[in-house]
Length: 175
Image (cartoon, rainbow, N blue to C red; front, side, top):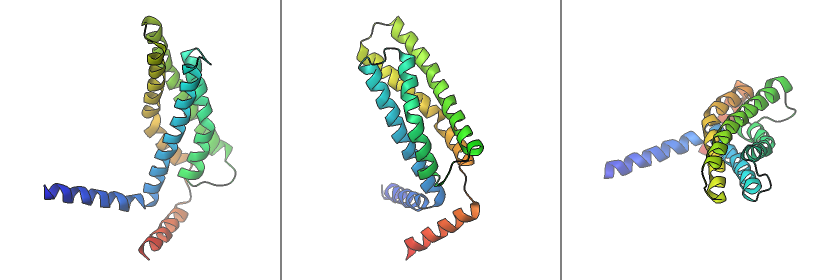
């Protein structure tokens, strides 16, 4: 029992140490950016589909995902990757929007499947709404790691600046 408790304390301690590194902070911020924008997307889908503002599964899914693109871009670029200033169109905007539209296309495939389920079964609208939102969430989960790898590449910053920033942060935590 004590060894498991010690192991857990060691893992928590290791996680805390990792979370103060540049890579750890970036991954944590990327995760929270994803949580926020997924919440925006799911909220939009639940509202427009759940309240019959947009009756079609595919239209509601498209709407919810498009609404989340802009906050996703700015949260990922500025907060997770620490990029400031004007976006570079070819190296940042085009790859980001390409990945976003690829993710939306994947979500629309999921929505097409849900549309089939909704039309072939006589579930209540509440169940249908939950299916639409749930499959959209599943599609986001599938693309999460892929997008992280791509965004890490397109929003990369100067390595020397990253190392310097990390060293300064470590000095502040040890003093």
